[in-house]
Image (tube, rainbow, N blue to C red; front, side, top):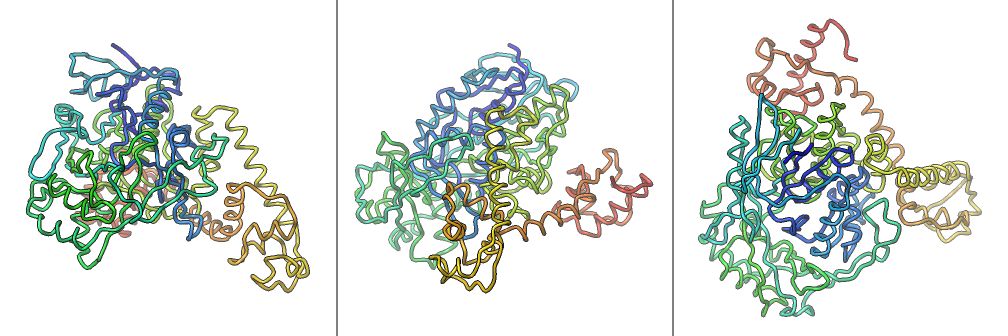
Amino acid sequence: MKTDIIVVGGGHAGIEAANSAAKSGLSVLLITGNVDLIGQMSCNPAIGGISKGNIAREVDALGGLMGRIIDRAGIQFRMLNKSKGVAVWGPRAQADKNIYRTLCRRFLEDQENVSLFQDMVTGIIVKEGRVCGVLTESGQKIEAAAVVLAMGTFLNGLAHIGMESFPCGRLGESASLKLSESIQQQGITAGRLKTGTPARIDGKTLDFSRMTKQEGDREPWPFSFSTGERPTNKIVCWELKTTLKTHDIIRDNLDKSPLYGGKITGIGPRYCPSIEDKVVRFGDRSGHTLFLEPEGLYTHEMYLNGFSTSLPFEVQIKMVQSLPGLENAGMIKPGYAIEYDYFHPTQLFLTLESRKVENLFFAGQINGTSGYEEAACQGLVAGLNAAKKVKNEECVVLGRDTSYTGVLIDDLVTKGTEEPYRMFTSRAEYRLLLRQDNADERLMPVAKKHGLVDDSLYRSRERAWQERGDIKKKLAAERVSPQMWEASAAGNKTELKQKTAACDLLKRPQVSIDDIFDVLEWEPLTIQQKVTIEADIKYEGFVNKQKKEIEKHKRIEEAKIPEEIDYDSMEGLLTESRNKLKRIRPLTVGQASRISGVTPADVSVLIMHILKRTNRCFT
């Protein structure tokens, strides 16, 4: 068997990698242990959230599949963080996980140049420092010019329920027990991480009257910029809290926890802790918020969000039945923890290609991340760059000022991670520029340049951008008099003493774009248009300031560090900094400055050395 590119793994990273690579015209073979489980939502049945929703929309703007699939498989849509500024809003959608999985496979099968193959990859084939294929469990030797590894939690996966442990990639699926060793034989170092998942509950056995109903938005946002119709909400979720009895059960059984008993050695996610962690670390709280989320339209199975655990099965039942409304709850699947191998991402270039093995790319949880969205954006970039490398074209690197995807990859490659990495808005220094509503304007031109979006979609988005631009120009030209303002419904919000440009009036915190349109008696806009135009105008001063900062630092930020630079000969570097620079070998001064432990003084030494060596200024 022979193909241009092999993608190993059928999760969210593998799906996007196969899709983006195939759009280059190259043949792509996606190999996975079970083709019926491509796109499986192994943890929560949802896409998006705060910052995660931004990434999902970026994936869509770059021609990915996630947004289009969740718009079709979504059963409840909500915009999170709406009480705060629009820069930190995050779309989130509950999914029917079976429909989502079915659509993932369908989209891949419909994508020209993609083929599916069910098998377990047991090793990579490397010749003269370059990957040239893989070996599989069934004895196949499959040749390829590039390989993208996206195996999630399957590498030496080990599940824990109480003191019982057993190999698996996900509950009910076999672990990959040989591939990790094959990769490490190439000098690529691995670590060990841990994640977990809650029990799944039988909805028929619950008393919902004791919980708080959580409904979807009245005007739901779609994730995909290609979705023409507004999504519809089909289910409700439920909110509840743990009780003191729950906490007592957990404390009384901590000795049976593999996490606290020392059986689990992998480091877990700090920002998504197990319920045992929450009770131990925040023991003074009377209750921790949980959410019951349906797993689909045609099942009673429900996901108990916020209740991840690895305690023994019989203890889990007691814990679940101590919750309000779950006194008679039946458990369909127990919660469990899983340990797995990952590869330190500082061994990668910003293109997600291995520094050790040419044409070998890594994406998703094997790079130390958590979450479907974080995996998807890495898969898209890795697949795109694998195709670029095979075609001998310049690879694509997304900047921190253009996307959360760029922030995530730069963080991983430059700083590394010792725990499952999760994206937050606070990680992005230019988050005012990286809103979820403007992902298309930021990234779709990049996608168009590299053949990831079709012409008709791009033209339709260009028309939308032009329309928004025209409206902003009209608002700048239109002036509102005090008489007009006082006669409107918004007249009591703020005083207007003289004629003022409508756009300047909109910059006032108390004034909304609906107020302006009401005063001017203009036709109303769609919710997406309103949010984007209002945010552009209200944040204009801050955005311009950030853009100036970006331009100010760009010359040094993008200054290239010669590949052959000798850090040992560089006087004035701290020993720790020297070692980290030698290990990570940053490509630019900006990347070097973000390495943990490298001081501003070290960066100054580096800059002076490069200037002296090249005898010229940075270009």
